Image (cartoon, rainbow, N blue to C red; front, top):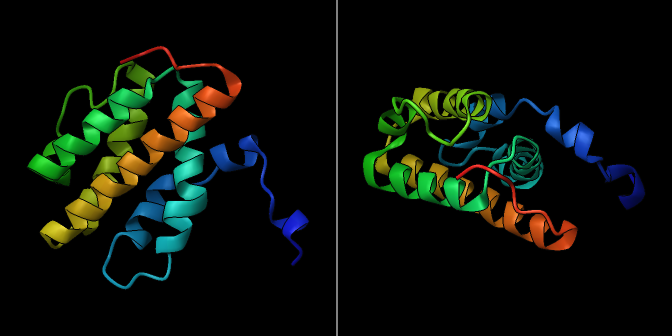
Length: 134
């Protein structure tokens, strides 16, 4: 496959099943880790950016996961601002919590959320948008 064929549009990335990528990408030695931190992180950034979530809200959530774990974060009433975005992110957190076995898995999820926040921030600088919630 040529590099040109590997390029995905924002719409294609937004349609990725992030919960499945989290289920199969968090475990130690997972073969899906690259997909989770690559297309999965960009897809999540697209979804949350379109929902108007600020990168700082996702970065804050990463700190919560790092401090309290995936299960704790999944139980939050509003993991990120906005009902639809919160519901989407809660499903992602629940997927991560369902396969969480160690503190390292929580750390991996926190690093992934931090990556999503960074991607959102860079996309915002390039497109001159900043999100809208949180």
